[in-house]
Length: 212
Image (cartoon, rainbow, N blue to C red; front, side):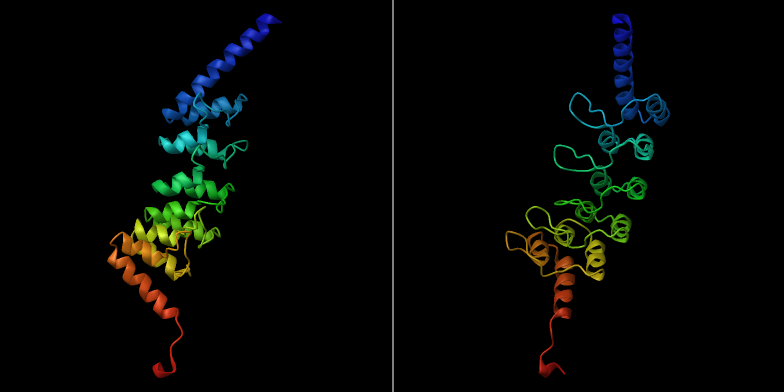
């Protein structure tokens, strides 16, 4: 019995090392073989990082796709910063991974910071559109009340700002510092974004009788 247990432990140790090495080398074939043999895809590495988050972060796209496709993979695990695989893929512009994660049911509307915040930050339009088509909350609020439009206004592209406004983002919302998206744009000296947001605000204000 002792010999059997020792053999099992050695096999598991080998699989453990092989699994994380395969992720970093983007070897989907090795990962699939280990998963078929019963390796748990949600096993943490020595730094408590899960395989899917490592694969998206490296990046190792083929390894990530293999893990996303595996039914037992927890697609909604979070790293120490509270970020999911969908959030990381959205931030970095990995549209194929975003599409695969959405198709497999990853949470689009995670409470707090969400994937749409992250996509808007770097102006990844095609990913923003995918998230909105998957019913992402356009005015999702971070823990301090920051919305995707605010992130786009300060960091993203003018096209990202326009997309959110066109899709109905509320330009008058304020975060906990009492700042609007217009304030975010002005603070970052984003005159193009500020002008676009100001125009959207004016368009929604009721006209006075003298304007008729």
